[in-house]
Length: 301
Ligand SMILES: Nc1nc2c(ncn2[C@@H]2O[C@H](COP(=O)(O)OP(=O)(O)OP(=O)(O)O)[C@@H](O)[C@H]2O)c(=O)[nH]1
Ligand SMILES: [Mg+2]
Image: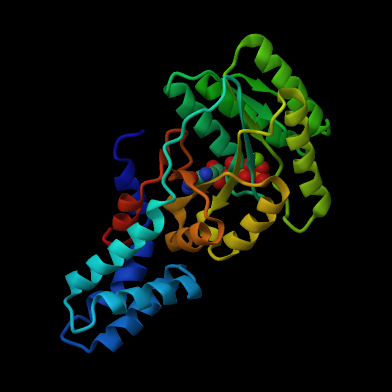
């Protein structure tokens, strides 16, 4: 993990932080709890926590702090609630097979290709032997992008010509990985609009190809969510989940968002672990998700 990671995350979340704490800090002058809770509600909504989730949190705070409370008490209560919500989403990532396959999916521009390279590097830094696969054959630029990222970190990239069948690319990559002795294959896929059913079919096909070659589906089906999309993240996630049965989420672009709070409803809606968070364009800007650090960065800055 890059040094100063959480410092950078906090810097990235600073707009969220202002949205969350700014309105609150001015109201702790002995006001009634009901007013404080109203302000808390506004602040959570502005941080993109979502209506349902916000109502839940506010109700929990109310229960926790029935009388008047100080600024610090309220902050502490909210922080504890958010940590409790997100604790179950932590997971220490480890590979389960001698040849593991990680399939990365997500809408256009969510950060898939960058994340594939980041996770590849992260695994390599853990002593693994990763292979990257360019199964986004829709655009030549996508293939070049992954090739360049792979080159910059010295990880092999398997690719074919633009327009090639993604299933065939994955098939050949797995055969290659097995013969060379790679222990993890990371598959980059095209950015798909979740409403375009044929594209979802393509993802299912990739899944079937892996099953055919290895006798089991990809070990991980990972959704890359752009933290800045806020509430849209939930409907996106549900559609991808229907197509490939997601096993985990990466929240990318937490550095560039005013809406880090969207992580909460996503976790609640899907019950999936957040495997990593992305906090920058650099290939070291990736770290395992930690509920305490996230909540602290979101609320306290
Ligand atoms: N600030 C920031 N930018 C990121 C992060 N992850 C990705 N990006 C940027 O987001 C843009 C899109 O990233 P890609 O990795 O190309 O996204 P993609 O999902 O592969 O895009 P398509 O293949 O077009 O669907 C690029 O400019 C990345 O550098 C992140 O964690 N933080
Ligand atoms: Mg891409």
